[in-house]
Structure formats: C-alpha cells, structure tokens
Image 1 (cartoon, rainbow, N blue to C red):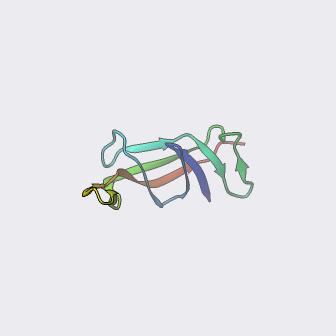
Image 2 (cartoon, helix red, strand yellow):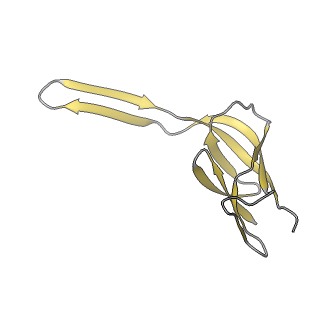
Length: 105
C-alpha cells in the first residue's frame, strides 16, 4: 500500500518504512510528523481525493536534519573582469514513514 501526499507544494509517493526529505521546520530528531494532505491511497479499492482524502493521514518520525547536494551559482560578464561564484546547500528534514492511516468506510 502506498499514498501520495502533498507537503510544501510538492508531492511525494510514500509507503511504510520509506524515507523522504521534506522542507525544514521546527522539529527535532525523534519527533512525530503528521501529513494531513493525502491526495491518493492505494489498496484493494484505490481512493482519490477531491482534492484530499478525508480523515486519511500519514505519520512519520523525524530521523535527522540533512543537507542537500551543493548547488553552484556563477555570474559572469565577458570582457568586464566580473565574476561571482556562490554555493548553496538547502537543509531538509529526513522523515521515515511509520504509518498510513486509512479512513473507515
């Protein structure tokens, strides 16, 4: 069974035991996060939300705060001896999905 959830304007396909990286928020390692915006639930009878599936939620446990791969931004103007190089590493929360709560029928 899997679910498609929405968090911070992005969609994630998740199943129990998987890890996802979500945008940073005020949470510590070991805290529990609950995602209420469930767009789709698979199973014997798939459920599609309009826009969200009512009373469905996905629970996850925060494992750590991690950094993404470094991105390089480089500005350059030819013949002007102008160049700027800036690096950026986005911080994320790594969350392990512990439970997909299906609403009663």
